[in-house]
Length: 169
Image 1 (cartoon, rainbow, N blue to C red):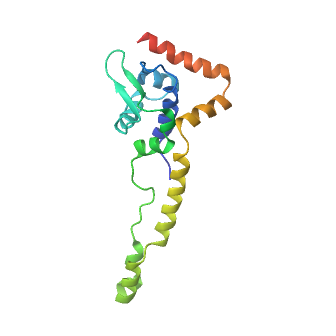
Image 2: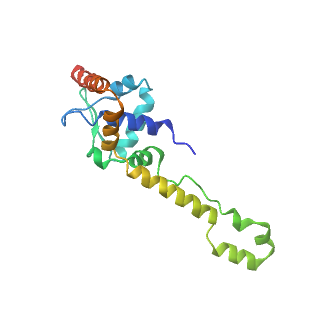
Image 3: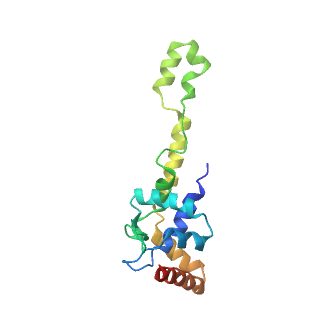
């Protein structure tokens, strides 16, 4: 199992939207340039984030993106679901219902089809645990962690980069 790079790009870029003034936005061009990532790909990710209500898009020359809700209300899981979709990671095909014994014995087939797939149940339980962990990590948490692990100078330079790029547009 692997999430696409879009989840990482989204989370990294969303944290930059936390500190901008309420009437400001940051453009895809600035976000992609700062991260050194594809502007086209990042646009696709932000379209998904907009559709999910995580960011709002402001059109026009001075347009761009801003958070659509409080950073404390945006979880990592919200971003994962917006970028990757809502389908479960494990896709059970109920192959247990097609086993040799099921094809030869109606009683076995009836019993097997009447019980849930144990493998599927275990996989869904594991996915649920992961979702809960990611639901408990918000953009606010991420921002606080970055304050803890990055130097104050790097945080200041990042904020200045986006403040200055916002003035250029």
